[in-house]
Amino acid sequence: MNKITNHMPTAELQALDAAHHMHPFTANGALGKKGARIMTQGKGVWLTDSEGNKIIDGMAGLWCVNIGYGRPELGEVAKRQMDELSYYNTFFQTSHVPAIALAAKIAELAPEGMNHVFFAGSGSEANDTNIRLVRRYWDIKGQPEKRVIIARTNGYHGSTIGGGSLGGMSGIHAHGGKLAGIVHIGEPNWWEQGGDMTPEDFGLMRAQELEKMILNLGVENVAAFIGEPIQGAGGVIVPPSTYWPEIQRIVDKYGILLIADEVITGFGRTGNWFGSQTFGIKPHIMTIAKGLSSGYQPIGGSIVCDEVAAVIGTDEFNHGYTYSGHPVAAAVALENLRIMQEEKIVEHVRDVAHPYLATKWAGLTEHPMVGEAKLVGLMGSIALTPNKATRAKFAAETGTVGYRCRERCFANNLIMRHVGDRMIIAPPLVIKPEEIDVLIERAWKSLDECYAGLKADGLFK
Ligand SMILES: *Cc1c(COP(=O)(O)O)cnc(C)c1O
Image 1 (cartoon, rainbow, N blue to C red):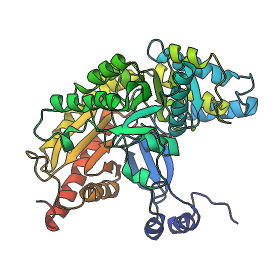
Image 2: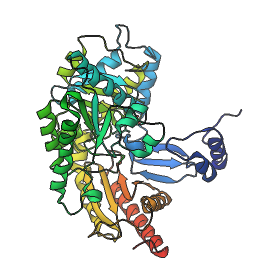
Image 3: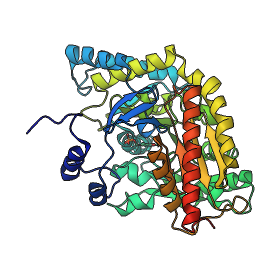
Image 4: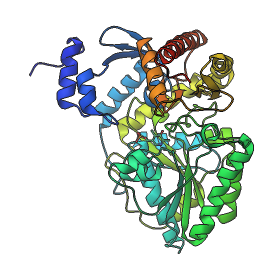
């Protein structure tokens, strides 16, 4: 077989892709007929595809390329580490410098009292670790019946059987099932579900579902609550201001463990190192992945507080991955964090990029079909609606309009995703003001085109 290169014609690459490559979260038959868009290069916030289009990436890949594409330092570190010690495990009483250094760096950046890291290869794996970790914690404490984990509808915690079960997406549960011992409460999604309540009252009500669930199950059966500070894959749902303080009050009152899934919100996305800091949450465990390495290597983990780590450490924990703390991935993640710190990328989000984007993003609500615009740090969403006052849905299946809008964005060389009829962005954190201008200009153009198409097709009513 010939070497497969970037220089093959797009159609040939697409045919091979269709013949052999099973894409995640995709109807592969339909994609095979249409042909995948093939990315060939990345630099900063820009991608190039096999047709030579220059695309601005409003999603940082899958929420992960925080420092932007194509930083040569990471490749150099990877090469050096492969040459020096390409692999060794961290089982059997051994360790190595990259895992040690990365764990220590993460402990330095994490909130006070969170000084321990269990490494995984991804966010999903890390959440699988968390299921076992919290149950093991209560075993050792002499309360083995505390096993139930409470999560949220429309939360996303990955796609392994554990991560998918913690997540509250019925489409995922429908394909392969859901683990026992995980239950879901409602999400703090005021726009879709708040009815006539104020966002604040609705946020309180949704948080209090946690208390009701704990009492229903019996606190003696509940191990933990897990939530994303801001739901990402669920549509960048920013909770009302009342939500997290009430969750914290309930978790504290009943003494259950709190897991903050920071896979997206970690490493600068919200304008602080962690979303928990932005929302004043005090978790026992934080799930990390994505921005930890800016996607240059697959690596994730669980940041564990001192008390939980001490309890777990009193006995053997029969859990681990061949690639836990993989030296190349760890070295690359460490270099990513060095760049984040030295180039003050979190400060850039907070002081430059967020304030600059915030006014323009809010300005999108002047568009006839944008009902609300939310932005925390560099994580934003807009709700598409035919009636802003009633927050109405379109007269088409949910997601139809969002999908059409996303297709216009793609055609205009902007990557913006849709979740239902919400459009979402999470650009690389290094995005510059002039690049934000391009993003906003293309977003307006795409919205205008989508709007015109909907009117022509009689869908805007
Ligand atoms: C992406 C994501 C995960 C899963 O991470 P993978 O690396 O894809 O396994 C878990 N939690 C949240 C909040 C995520 O956004």
